[in-house]
Length: 133
Image 1 (cartoon, rainbow, N blue to C red):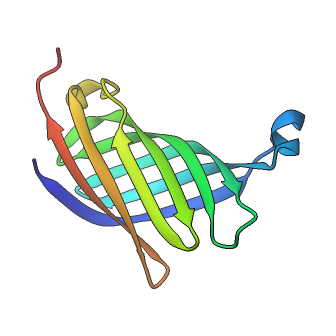
Image 2 (image 1 turned 180 degrees about the vertical axis):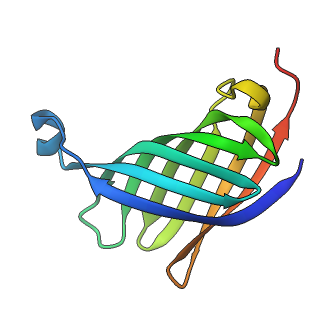
């Protein structure tokens, strides 16, 4: 399975929650991303987060729809995020939602790792592109 790497820009904006969710302490954010490199795409998504009473501990889930080109193949797909921070130690899983690839990205599977270095966001995307069922 090939792995591609590149940079991405992200804009995160707070969004309104339902009264019930707001009272429970959840946070809601919108994501607007631009991936550069072998993944040349735009993405929009939504994130829900929760902070613990213990400093440095939190969790989030998110979905984002990615549309553009992957190694020259055009289409779209969804990424599913599940992240946690335990007293400052991060854990993150970002995977392609099965069977969400469209057009030339049908059959796409894989996982994406995110690195933040000196305020800049980087991705490493390991993927497989098999024939659609």
